[in-house]
Length: 510
Image 1: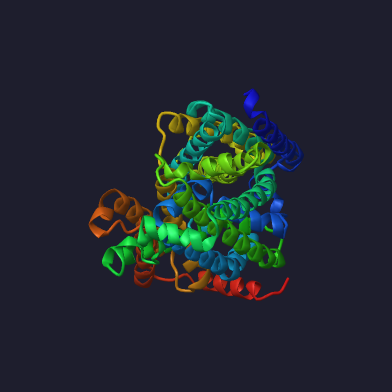
Image 2: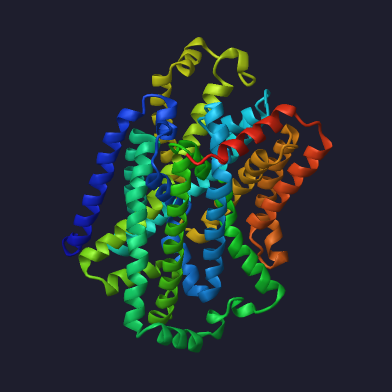
């Protein structure tokens, strides 16, 4: 530890800031809206930076840099897809979604869906909760895997110890501070990530001798690294790769952890300003990550794990204190998603399952004989918020158990979880705010088809179709099922009025 004291000093300072944010934010977590939505008062910079960093995670600094290393310019299709989806989401989807979320006083996305589609039997709430818990578990495990890899790469400590250390930090500030602590910490974390991903490729490219030398040496290593369609060229495999890479951005249109940011924003102007910031941050993130990987391919043509290229470059090219900042940047990427996923899963348990499904007996389809003590807890906002903090801790401990036994490839593990959440929720949310003809059966069909198709495709369909990313297929299936079933069922006139209200609210300037 003595030889790595600059890294530890920077890390301890960074963690102290996170702990301070948790303590500061804990005063705002006295009810569920305060704990899970920061009281719907987040300003533009916080919302924009938080959404950008939450949508990226450990796969950005470890996974996407690894893809830049392996694929070269072909990985830039990921950048294009994410930036385009971010711009569309904040410009068109966010304002309409928030309009109805505020009108419904929704705390979770399931609250929103239940009100929008008049789901008195809570089918969407039950289905959505199951999807969130399954996918959040794999997502959380991937982030903690990133934590283990990061501490092992930078500080040489065992993988298992890195998983535990990262988990303890995340659990502390998330469980105590709720979304307010998470979002404000995301602002700091996104700034660190952006600075790291601007500085490192510049230094690495300078070390190589400039962009022209970088291009020459990449072409010498493999001409496919400089081709937009990669080594496959204009073939079915090449176009499938482009569709897959661009498809990564689809979840930015409606993954539940990002929809929550719209719900937590202060007002319409906040969404407008926050969207500009989110798009700019995504550009810096993704371009920097891909260029870092490409430079790493030239400087280190033979490494065992391409996902370790950023720690390797930072350690070799930067002074120890700056390397410490890169360590915190990688941890920031991990924490900015892990904390949001934890809160998402916790809200599904506490708000959707416990309070709404097992709460007051008149809306308790799963346990009509629930004890009075539990029902009273569900009716007490302060006690329910404390219960939410406890659930967050428990879910985090479960995530540790999943992450410890195996060192995974972060990029593909995260993308599987990302696609499951995106395909289940985004088609339903988008159609629900734009299409007056959308029905409850259509929403149920869209959610089940989107999620189910993404999982089935991941397990059995990809090898036969050039490894086409499951998000692309699941997204299309979710939209198709929702539209077809809605056309075959009777529309609710109230749903059309809700769409009209959202459209009118979105047209307002402030």
